Image (cartoon, rainbow, N blue to C red; front, side):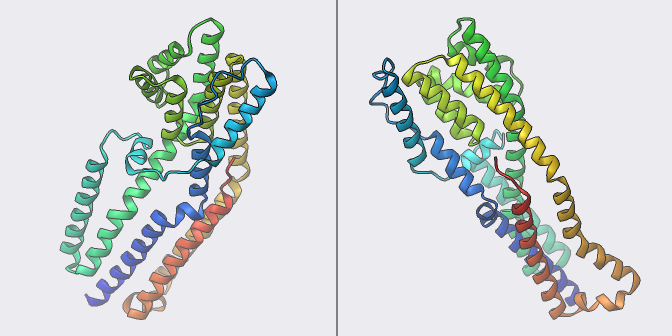
Length: 325
């Protein structure tokens, strides 16, 4: 019984350490922190004191655009709050309710594991995994899935704005059309833009908040185009048409990268699963040979260390085969 508890404890501690690394270390290794800083810098607020004065002079207009872009790139970056992360994942719950749910899930996990193993150490390790690793993984998974769906539908929304502007409709009316007829999650995001305008925000300020809610390059480009057109004038339909072409080319490039990296991802999956497959094969053929890893404290430590190093290797391989456009 003691050896079994030591085995389970070692495995849970290793999983807990991997969960903590995923929650706090992976964003730095995978480049997500740098990507958030880069996209947040593009969508930060501009200095609006020179608004509307340089529209008539092309040279001043170009200078103002350059200054606006420089200001966007040099603004300070704010770390995403829990409320923003929950909103990006598409969950309609408050941060407090989310934390309460995490705490309840962790408490239930601790109680269940303690009843099964009668070991406080094992239950604590399982509770750490349930409190830190699982919620962060769930938020990241839901956010990535929602962002992917948004990127697929966003070029169509831009086309609606282009056709509406060319037909003489105001940009705000085009936003309302998208907020009514577009598929999710584009519809809900543009609905928030429309609601922001109803409380007194300008179109530029509403799109800046839109880019903050969804910190991806596509929304940053859209916010920049809308804001620059409001400040310096110009043909909005032409600018948005160019943006739509850029978005579609980015989508094609991402699909091409996925196809080219499919072999590397398959290789990484095989390498990551190979130790487990070999361990199962050895256990089925000669159990006494591998039993020492499960029946001794030293073996448990070796298993925990191996799982930890495998987690680090998986993170590194993921970083090597991920491409940021």
